[in-house]
Length: 208
Image 1 (cartoon, rainbow, N blue to C red):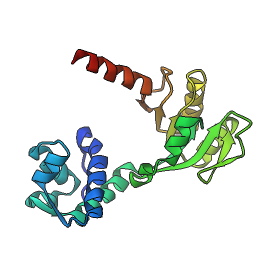
Image 2 (image 1 turned 90 degrees about the horizontal axis):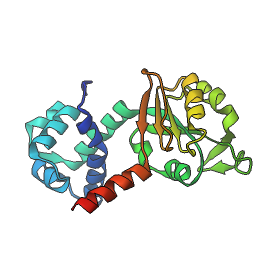
Image 3 (image 1 turned 45 degrees about the horizontal axis):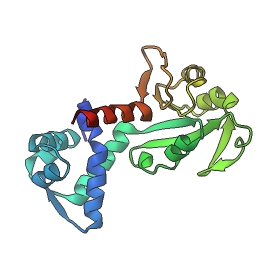
Image 4 (image 1 turned 90 degrees about the vertical axis):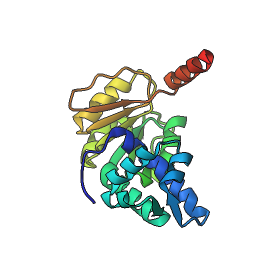
């Protein structure tokens, strides 16, 4: 499989392809056409053709594909492009939900450690992970060569946690807190706010 720069929109669609194809497999569907992929995933035929060619150029020669072959191609690409290790800081409801989410493993993301500052949960096990004190965040993140830090804490400690993650060598931070983080230019920062997303959705509904 070739290693090329894939457009970000195409990369974002990888998980949608994977989920859809696995559903077809459960229904014992052996083949799927570009037309069906486009219709069911709400994409254009040109988008589907471009995506599949990006993932494996041999897929561009046909408009009908083996479901099993497509799943194998997408899974190999997900592992190749997205294999990363991560820690989660903050094991409240959102942190627990992310730790339990099975889709990360399919996308090549492995959660190696979890941290919290609540003495009542430190030392407990959650989804086969021991919950470590946040005081050990920098030490363990560095030792495990983690490259993504996931922050699910309240806003107040988020910048301090981000600083510790950066000092420990992470390359990216996925920020679920409401804090506006400041990070160096060489650190990739992704902000995901359930509150902001809801406000945006609510505003669009009001405009209809």
